[in-house]
Image: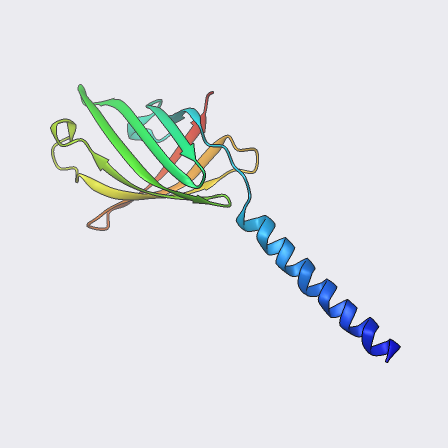
Length: 135
């Protein structure tokens, strides 16, 4: 019986360890709040304000494109180092030929200062995008 108790204790410890490790990954605390800039070719140095509360993320951005001010906003979630948002270009600032809506699928760097990934319009056009924290 003593052997059975040790085996049971080992199993309980292993299950507790696995659950604790999984919980730690899910509740990883990243703070995205602050000022960021884009480092993407067409929108290089565009200012992005990022607001995070819990796992909810909101972003606002303005930039010049072909002499016209463009503005977009997005909202989504962060889970660990993965950030997924849905964006919308403000209709009266949308460049001709661009779509209003799309998604950003981003990964936060280990140091918390880069968000890199893919933007995609609702029709499926995709492009690389990167944001760099400045404050």
